[in-house]
Image (tube, rainbow, N blue to C red; front, side):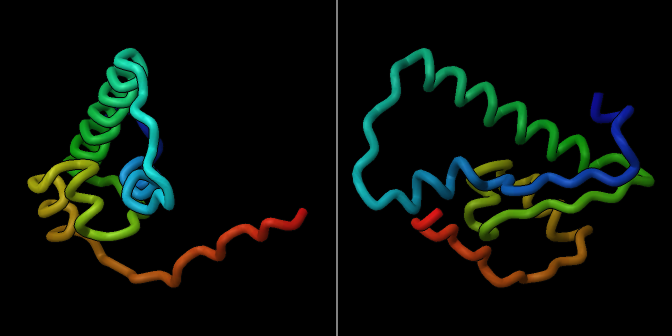
Amino acid sequence: MIENAARVMVIDDVTVAVDLVREAAVPLETDSADIQALMAVEAGALADAVDRLSRLPGRSWILVASSVERLVETVGEETTERLLAIAEQAELPPRPRPSARW
């Protein structure tokens, strides 16, 4: 599927799962074993997709991560090193937090 994907891919919030855990304001409850297994499968699939996408010739991609450290946690050190070696990087200001009022 990755090989047949669009010529330009956007992977936004690639580190969101790690961000949520690291930025939790209160201790999180432990998920059931089934949920933990599902999250592990999803995390592995995301890491594999990013790894494979970064190796495809003639493709462009935009990957948004909160930090290099969290990118390492999300996709692994080898993939992160490859991404940083081949990508143009831009540091963006933090996204505004949604207001509590609707």
